[in-house]
Amino acid sequence: MDVYLAVASKRDGRVYAERAIPPASEARILDAGRLSGSARNGQPWTFTVADSPAAKEAVATSVYRPELVLTAALVVVITVLRVGRLYDFDAGRAAQNMMLTAWDDGVVSCPNGIARPGALLGPLGLSDDQRPVTVLSFGYPANARPAKRWPPESWSARARRRPFEQVVRRL
Ligand SMILES: Cc1cc2nc3c(=O)[nH]c(=O)nc-3n(C[C@H](O)[C@H](O)[C@H](O)COP(=O)(O)O)c2cc1C
View 1 (cartoon, rainbow, N blue to C red):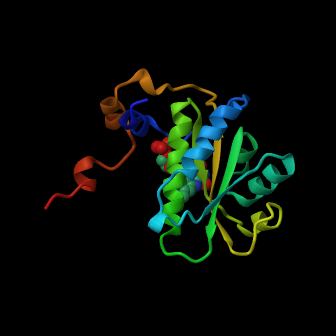
View 2: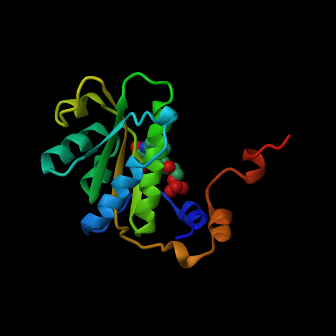
């Protein structure tokens, strides 16, 4: 998929079909995160995939909307090392790369805010130097909205985003 089309048509999908993501697609999604750039190439992240029902349950308990995790086909917790000024920025780059790669395969996704980080550390076996940044939920959409339905310019015009002129300054 054209990258601008992927970016313009990507919306955060929260309603998932009961359909597994093929292993090859899942591997591409996770590898897209691994390949992301980071400050000084520090790669401060770990991606924990919540595969077992117990792990999924623990992650669901930690977020604001548990059902987004419980209904997802793939759940990825991004943690970074505790101390690092740019680590959240790095984690954001990895998260968006994973979500765009998923979208290229027709898989929608959503970042989930973490309300109770303490609920994650023990059950996921995370060491004390790990800080959870976000939980990504992925799945095929219950209602498909294919990217190729419209050109990127149409997606851009329809997006619930602040207007270009307000966001971009030119001096
Ligand atoms: C750091 C972060 C945390 C988020 N947490 C949640 C969340 O807890 N629940 C949720 O439904 N959406 C969450 N979102 C998704 C935002 O609501 C979404 O990106 C925004 O509304 C734009 O959605 P759209 O792309 O579908 O227009 C989060 C997004 C970010 C970047």
